[in-house]
Length: 155
Ligand SMILES: [Zn+2]
Ligand SMILES: [Zn+2]
Image (cartoon, rainbow, N blue to C red; front, side, top):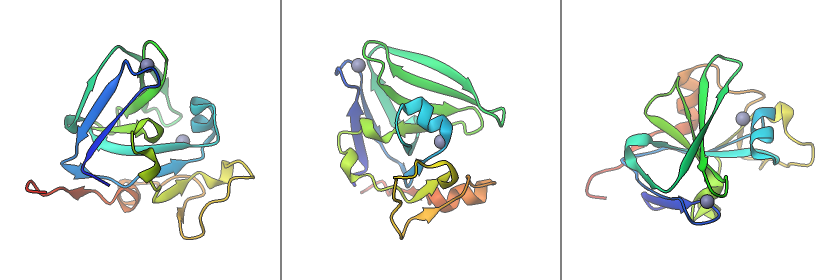
């Protein structure tokens, strides 16, 4: 995938661009929070550095305190309520794009599937995907999923 990511909301009022200086691998999350938040089967998260992102348009922010105590900020288009990204106060500097808002969302292949213990029974996870019954318990585990990779300046 290109190092420049673009995307936006359903109505077109919100558009964003991410000039990645750091690349992260995407993951799918089958936890019940992601099911409720997305109103669907699972969430697909594409992490990026917040400093790499520019976003234009009318935004509103929701808040959710997770069981761990971490506070998630959920940022959406004010007009059509498409959720664009979430932040997490335990992971400053990184935001999770809702990967379905990417213009090239079909290029996103989750490197890992989290919370498969609560996935909907008809969802079949690819046999070669990295799976977690819940989620990584520490930063080292998260880094195994993200495999952050600096993008060379002359790329
Ligand atoms: Zn919109
Ligand atoms: Zn989740």
